[in-house]
Every structure is written in structure tokens, then in C-alpha cells.
Image 1 (tube, rainbow, N blue to C red):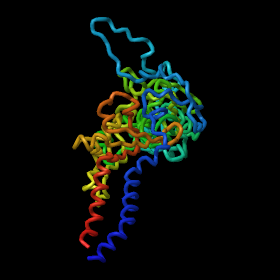
Image 2: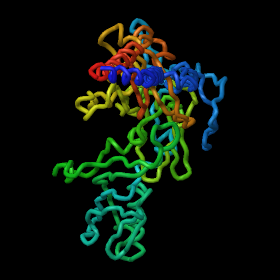
Image 3: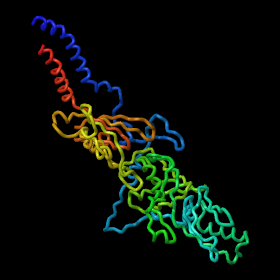
Image 4: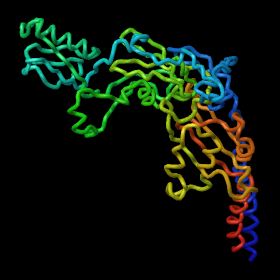
Length: 425
């Protein structure tokens, strides 16, 4: 008995040191106080003043203040019309056509991979279906290769007629060529600027066997995915800072500026058909525009978010309640909805209301990783304040931390588990 008392007496300093270490670990959240967790200059904040930078140049790492974002706050906002007054649509809302646009005036241009039907009267040896090769040429019997990429069907008809006449196969008055496009192929287009994933994108990719026999036998083809909007969406959509009324399309030295706000507001939009080698540039306003943060034809439908809500380590995703629907969120989701999806909200009010939610997000303009922290009580009581409840962006990380009450409860439980074995001695 005396041995046990002496042994327990010697263990007192050990227990004191252990309690001090546990208490210190219980307050570990204060070790990150030197990290800026404010909502100032946070990209997901609609009240942000914006970032000043130069296009065609990597942005500086520091923020610039004083950028006026008020003129962009309603960019892409849905329009409302009154039925008791006449609607006067301005002349600016007119779709571009071949009569008023230099690029559309060129017509539909052929690209490598396109399937065309060549029909020549009394030209049985030349008639047939041809595919424009990777170099942009079609190869006909006898007359050889003819450049087709970047040309319209009318231009290609003229080239083939001249080749037949020069080869003395047809007389000038009898060389009649007709060309039909049977299938528009997938093409590569360069997309740069205020999109989530700039780079070269492949559009109009069709699954094998999607076309039926009637479609293949018909002359002509129409593609719904070889368009400007599809190229932007293939680059993961526009960012909230995009200048949607001044998207630039460059083709063979020609450049046009396109207003695509109608994709979100309901106005008419000229969705340009694209050709291989086109370049699309989406300028940035430097300002966060809340009206652009919703699913549309040129914005993401949804995105992936990394979430963590664990008190103790879990053995698998199922027991941790981390599944497909908790990490795939619709575009336009705010921090409160993400916290609910991660099971951070709800339960016992006394212990769960003081819980904290930490959001780590990368500013797409500057490339800086920003971290903010909010309490569950803040999010639930002030969800309409943008600085409290910011928007989430693709690949953000959300983590939940327990309240102090839960931490101290676990500390007490740990101490109990340590002291009981000594009492048994």
C-alpha cells in the first residue's frame, strides 16, 4: 500500500505536465492568430473594390485599391420589363450578321476533320466524300491536294473548278462543282483571360454512333457545340470578374468584340460559329460581379469543393459522411450552404453554435491563397452580409472546427482515462 502511495506521489509532476500539455493543445487554434482571416480583399466578396492589373501580363502579387467597380455590379443581371408600358429595345441589341460583321461575312469555314461531299456533273471519278486532313487539305484523284482548311465551301468549289480546268480535264463552261458539309468535326480553340481554366480546348466532340442513317445521308450538317459559348464553357466557364460585354474573337487577323451578357440577362446574343485556330480572349474588369455567379451556358454548372468535418480520424469516407453530393456543389453556392453540406451546422446549440468554419480559396487573378474564418453563429444570423458569407469558387477547401466547450469536454475525458489506471494501482 505504501509503495502505491509513493508511486502515485511521484506521478503527480508527470500528471501536471500532461495536463498542461493537453490544455495547451486545447487552445491550439490561437496559434494561427497571425494569419489574416478578414474578409477584406477576399475574391468571393461581391463588395470587393477590385484588383488593378494589365492584360497580357502576369498580375502583381499585391492588391491595388481604388478600382471603381460600381459600373459592373449589374453585369449580366436578369432584365425586367413592364407590360403596362411599351417596350423600347435599343438598337444595340441586334444580332450580328454577315452584313455587319467582318468575321461572319467570311461564312462557315472548313477545319481539319470536316467531312464534305464533292459532286461534279459528269465527274464520276471525282465525286465522293472527303475528309479535310490535319494539314487542312483534301486530296482528289489526278488533280492532287487542294487547300480546304479555313476556306468556305464556295471558295473550295472555285479552287476545285480551277484545278480541273488547269489539268484540262474539264472545259471552263462545263466544270461545275458543288460541295456539301456532311459533318462538322471537333476543333481546337485557344481560350485566354478571365476563365477558370484558360488554354486550348476541344469542342464539338461527338460520341461514336450518335448520328443516324438519315442524318448521314442528308446533305449538310448543323453543330450546336462548335460555337463561341461552347469554347468558353470548355474552359470551365467565365470567372466573376469577366468583362462579358467585350469578349474578343480573333481569326486570321480579324478581330471582333462580342457582347455575351444576353447569355445571363435574356438579351439576343450572337453565338459565333468557330473554326480551328480561332482565339478567344475574355477580358477582366478586375471586379467581382455577383450576377455572374450562377449556372448558365457560359458559367460552370457546378464545381468540386474539398471538405473536412472530423473530430476524430475516420476509417473511410462513408463513416465520415463525405460523399459525392457533399463535395459537388452548384455554382453560386455560398459558405453557409457549404457548411451545411459538410454537416457543420445543427445539433446541440450550446456546443455546436460556437463552431468555426475555415475557408481556403485561391484568388484567380493574383494566384494568392486566402484564408478566412467564420463562426457558425455568424453565418446563420448574418447570411446576407457578403463579407460574412462569401461565394465559393472551384477547388476551394472548407474545414470545420469544434467549439471550445467540445474541446474542454474531450480534455476532461482524456484526463479521466489517464487518472483511472493510477487509482486502480
